[in-house]
Image (cartoon, rainbow, N blue to C red):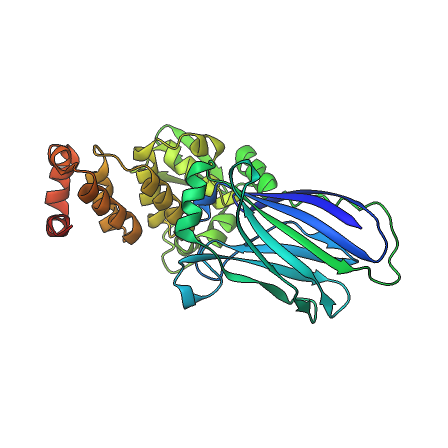
Length: 352
């Protein structure tokens, strides 16, 4: 039997479709796991992963787990990891397994093979050092921040299974439902006034996603039961993007498309830090690292220092040191602000 299937990850979400044909004795499957917008997964943390949708091969269910920062601490996040995970089925299954990483035009950039035995449901097998992160980042640069993990596997046909059409199970759409709930304001029990705009929201959702909101609404920091909370020091577009992330775990589509808006991304980073949304802060940090320029690097460096964004700080210092732009940076208003706010950084700049 040969199976071809595809799943796609966007902002950690998965979509899939499966088709297959039969032959005697064994099942061979090819499953392509498409990962897009990888920069938004960067910085998830070691041991954290995104998964393909489940796919069935030989009477068993499987999925691919991909670890953007590696699956263990031994490599200090220098490698990404990829594993095949046994979801459901008969225990002690032996698989001929190949995982490949495909780049532009489906060219194979990395390939690993083995013949593991999965002793029980919940077992996995794969490669902690699937590809160096630095090598992957170069591939992403050439391929629009996306790549595909191709899993080719062969297992013996499980006795007693019958051929038939695959059942297409609808994919989760929780993020869509929550986005709709945020947009229409149904059931909202708090309203934020930001600039000239009002944003209805749900206290339980905010508290579940942010320890800061939880303390403000239900904890010792609780000071009021106001149904309308005024926020004076934030632009409406920034707060709107922050709320969208709280409900969906991703940025609005127009933010993904406008990767050049560094100023807005800086403001969103500050807002994410203010409300303890660490993943959003790291997403902003990753995007800012990709689009540093001489006019804004000093301002970015100040915020990186103030909000403990060490990777962004290092990227800014490296940019100033490596591109002979210090003379341009010295003339910007941002540099004057840098000297006033963080004078010690000047020493680090000169050391570079």
